[in-house]
Length: 416
Image (cartoon, rainbow, N blue to C red; front, side, top):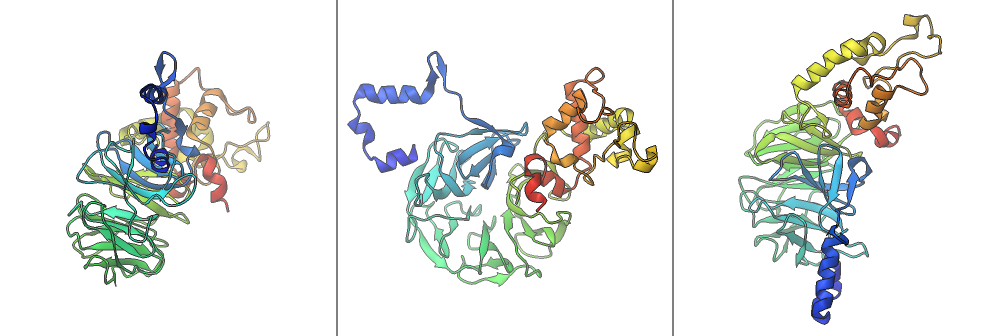
C-alpha cells in the first residue's frame, strides 16, 4: 500500500466512487462470503530478521521486521503478516510513547530507499514522514530515546538525529568505525550507545564525541537499552553483558554462545528480565532471567520449570533406558558393539544431531517411531501428542544456546 500511494499520488481521486468501493472490498474480502486470510508462515521459514519488538498488548508475541515486511510471531512457531506491504525493513523501533506506534526504514521491493516511516496502527499501514538528511535514507540501525521519545537516532552515512519525532533530521556527527547497532539511553536523550567492530562506545553529547564504554575492543554487534535502564551488550568472544545506563560495572550474564552471536534484542517493557534475541542464524531465543539462561522462543510461554521437570520424569520412565540419563545416548560397548539391527540409541543432548530436527519432527518420531531404526518404537498408544510435546521441551532443555540457535532447517549453515 505504501508504494502504491507514493508512486501514484491521487490514485483514489482518479478512481470513481464505485471503483474505490470495489478496491476496498477486494482488500477485505478474499473470497465471496468471508474476509481474506492473512498470510501465515512458519518461523523457520523467515529469513533476515532486521529488528523485533514485544507486542505491548500480548507480551508473548513479537513483531518481526524482515526482508519482506512486518510479521507478528507467536510462540507456537507461526508468524502472520501485518498489513500488505512487503518492504525490506532494514531498521525497526517501537515508539515508547505510543503502544500502537512503530518507526522503520529500508527498501521498497522495486529498489531505492524508503526514508523514515511511521505507523500508528501497529504496522498495518505506514506513512513516509521524512526523507532524512541527504535522503531518502535507508537507516540500517535506529533507536528512540525513552527519556524523550521525540529524539530518534538513525545510521545512514554517519549518524543522523531527529528531535521532533522524525519530521526533520540533521547529521549529528560521525560514528565509530564499522558501527553495527545503536541504542538510545532510557534516562538521558543526549546519551547514545554504538556497537561497533572495535567494541562498545558511548556518546554523552548526542553523537558528537565518543568514548569506549567497555574494556573489550572486540566486535559488538548488539546493544539494547531496556525500559528499566539496563543496558545489554553482546561482545563476540566474551558473551552477553549487562550494565546500568548511568555507568558503572558490567556483569557477564552468559558466555555460553560458542561460535554464535546475537544481532537483535527486544525486552518486555513490563518485565525487562524477559529478553528475546535473534541469533546470527535467524533463530529467536528467549531468556526469562535477563540473559543468564536461554530457551527456544517456541513454547517459551508455557514451558515452565515445573513442566520441564515433569517431562523429565516422563523421560525417565519411557526414554532413559535407551537414550541414557539426561540424553547422553547409548554407547556401542553398552550393548556389545551394536544391537541386532545394527543401531545404538543416539544421544538426545546436543552432542549428536538431535538438534538437526524441528520440534514437530521430534514429536512425530516419539509418537510414530522411526522407519529407519526398529528399536525406536511408537509411543502413540502410551502418551498423548501433548505429552510428546512436553518430552520435546525436556530434550531441548538439555541443549546449549548454539543448538537452540541452529535447530532444524538452520543446522546446515551452522556446520560450516
